[in-house]
Amino acid sequence: MTRQDGDPATMSIGEVSRRTGVTVPTLRAWERRYGLLVPVRTAGGHRRYSDDDVRRVVAVLELTGQGWAVAAAARRVAGEGSASPVRPPVDELRDRLWSALDQALRELPAGTEAPASPEEPLAMDQDMPSADALEAAGSSGASVRTAMVRQRRQTAAAAGQPDWQLLETVHQATRGLLYIASAREATEILIAAVQRLGGSTIPAGQADSWALPIDLSFGEGEPILPVAEPLSLARMQLEQMLPGLVEDARRAVQLLRRSEGLDG
Amino acid sequence: MQQPQITQADVKRFVDHLARRDRKAAVRQALELLEAGVLVQDIVQVLLGSAQAEVGRRWEANQWSVADEHAATAITDAALGALEWRIEAAEDQGHVVVTCAEGEWHSLPARMAAEVLRLHGWQVTFLGASTPAAHLRRFLGEVDAIGVVISCSVPIFLSGAQRSIQAAHAAEIPALVGGRGFGPDDLRARRLGADGWAPDTVAAAHLLMVWRRQPPEAKPTASASERESLELEAARTELVQAAMNDLFLRFPPLAGYSENQLARTREDLGYILQFLEAALLTDDPRIFLDEFLPWLTRVLTARGLPAGVVTVGLEALAAVLDGYPRSQELIAQGRRLAADRALDG
View 1 (spheres, rainbow over the protein chains, first blue to last red):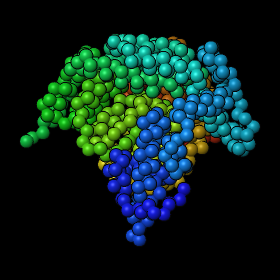
View 2: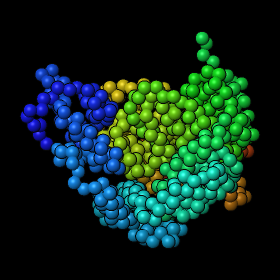
View 3: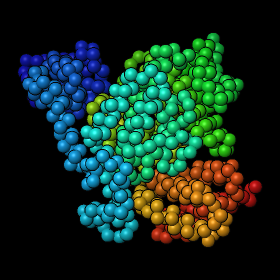
């Protein structure tokens, strides 16, 4: 994108910020990352912005208001140099979901497409690293072990690509959290989610090394921890999905306590 | 006017509420202090912070169980949540993301940091416990932030912290690290490639202010000498098993251990290796020698084991750690220190 003549660049970034309501650091980030702003330099080296820059920022704000992700909106506006999106955001969203799913399915390790039997471990310990990984690491025994750790991490990251079933579990739980009437109900929703992810739960008093140290009880009743065998698929699913879910549950419980004046 | 301060008596009262698992009394006390004019920052860092340190101490001394510790932490968390609604943020400083290092499930310290930052006028997104690095990377790709604050409480999650830092850098957002796991200075932070380290949240807030005016220079990822650390991680399970076999010969009482006690012993050997890995990863022997070994000795002796049991465990590991020269060296140092401490009484 090039600057058009006849559009004098006179504004400081602070002025752009005032006119759009977007903070200066955010504007700088949009400029750096997406090329959304195209300043000219004064003789003294200061950046100056034009009405076009303001228009592009406003266009991004409009798109995000319709549900677009900032990155997608900014790239689109910066790429077109105009503010009129040609496709409704719903289509865009659907595309992104489908390509994410596509990607997830391609990257899932063999054997994980069937979440119907989530107890089944991935058995990665027995797996040998791929020929590529071995070659990249050289051939000494120590390097083979190092390659195996790297590969295990990559496999874990790939297994973490959410598939539909995982997303559905999380969605169902999050939706449930909107309707809780007590902290106990939030705990029950989390316990159900842990089970759907292939794990189970245990009172903290009986916890062993299989337990994840995250209490699901919110200070009401006995602390309860999720458990899953180390390196099993269930364990990986819990490690991927549970932190965010527990955080949402904590939020829901806080809102409830606040609304009922239970927090003091 | 004199600003009211948190006293020892306040902390003791709060810990008593935790001991009785009385959530409402704990929340009420925090809110009363707020009404009395105590700074939110002090309530969070001094009252809740000291109380949690005491919770850890009681667990260490075997006075409180794991369940007691979790119950107390949940109540402190509820008090923090109640304060959150009463925090009136100052002017908008900008957006900052706060998260726990990958693998670090202790989220309360990070949550406390998030609240104090909010108080300092930052718009904070708190991601919670143990955010996988890949999730962090995806999330950061969609937001703008002055920085990511990465919390690590236990050094064995520093390798996870390193992956979190790399995720931040992949999204071109600078990483500020902190928490007990990073130790008393910026050495570990630098070795892991972080852009900044803060000893506490107030210092973190100041550093973020600086970054807001002048983002830190992007630097090449530090190449900590992590090879032996990775190799140890890869072989950990087999090494623990080999050390257990050695321990049966070296430590006859083991033959009489219950299944549960054997499992705990295996866990402890695994911890020793994990702390070794962290010390090698960051090239900071203090993790192993000054922080971990004295702590393990305290924990085990509080549970009725003889003090010498740590030395025996180290000997068993030394016997099986062939081909791990730096680990051998650290273990030898650890044994010398343990012997000195035994002489000191």
